[in-house]
Amino acid sequence: MSDFTTLELIKDPRGFATLWLSREDKNNAFNAQMIRELILAIDQLGTDASLRFVLLRGRGRHFSAGADLAWMQQSAALDYSTNLDDARELAELMYNLAKLKVPTLAVVQGAAFGGALGLISCCDMAIGAVDAQLCLSEVRIGLAPAVISPFVVQAMGERAARRYALTAERFSGERARELGLLAEAYPAAELEQAVEQWIDNLLLNSPQAMRASKELLREVGHGQLTPALRRYCENAIARIRVSPEGQEGLRAFLEKRSPAWQAESSNKEPRP
Image (tube, rainbow, N blue to C red; front, side):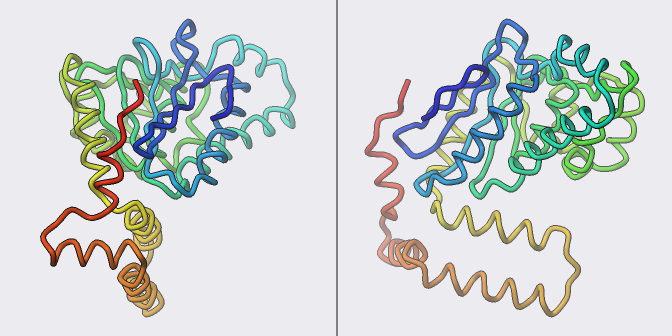
């Protein structure tokens, strides 16, 4: 996969990719370069027809400390138009991550501040350490979590988002689990084992069915129960039933055997 300066993008032979934030010396704080590289990496992942799912992780002790201080200092000296361009790039990143066709799983340890909560919220699922520290820290430095706010509200609910965006309180991984921002929270020493369990579970599933389910849930998640939505759902199940993987899955179920995609993933050794 492509070379990056602030990221590592690793494709596992079993068919999934891990996108690592890799500025460990800066606690994976993001700057303009990281945002651009994330956009490029997500675009690249979006064109990979063989991709099953994506993990989003941070190298080292922390998921991400949010925005890089030096980058913020530079931004403060720029005019409105240039800052608007920066905001549009960040928005492009968030929207592209949220709309990636394959399932996405964020893994959170250490600190996840500011815009890092946007990345977590844009993923379909997130898990983390119980002692992780999360914070919508923008108001402490005179800013607002503007670009990430639609995704944060969807992920943790408007009431909780109001509290943590207005107070800038830190909250733990366990609290994030209670709010629904994290699906599960584990003791830090058990997080890697939990990641492997999530990988194993996702590898059991039909890649095309996961893509179809993600698209389906995006359509129904915010829609009213209209005749058009009903027809969309009817067509969605009809398409997946007659697809090659749909046919294989039904045959395997009736024949009491594993479907082909499980055999394909289990026959490949994971990359260290």
